[in-house]
Length: 185
Image 1 (cartoon, rainbow, N blue to C red):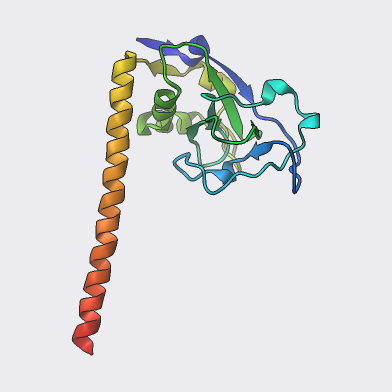
Image 2 (image 1 turned 30 degrees about the vertical axis):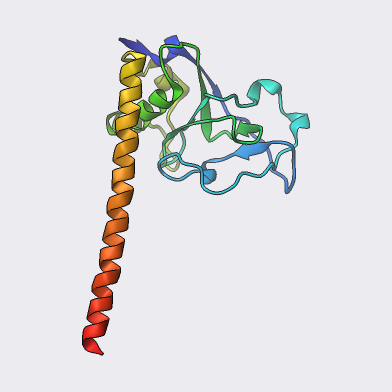
């Protein structure tokens, strides 16, 4: 099935706020993520909840899409994180169709083909930005849930394979350097 994002989700912008040293909420910013949308380090509450409307509180399964700058990625917000809100660097995409898994949607948004398309639509000369209108009209292929799960499993296994290959390469380099060092002794 193909559909547009506006048919299966609501999209809202993150909030503009000034973080503090201590607070009630985590103010998620692009700097909290790597280029693959994975969280870097621990999250600490750094925003007071008093000034933030509850409609901006993130819910498990919300997909954060970094729409500004060169690092455009999608990441699924999970309950394991402290209560959080997204910064204006993100669009918060809340899926309301149970036929699409948030993790699959994030995978789709992060896929090279989708990323290439989105980057081609970005506006702005100094800081490129992908508009809400473009996201709303984005056409999404939605296979059945079982196929989505298979795609996610294959993606997970491929990621694990890459990490293992990198570890092997690193260990081989250590062995070679040690042999060279031993040879010149």
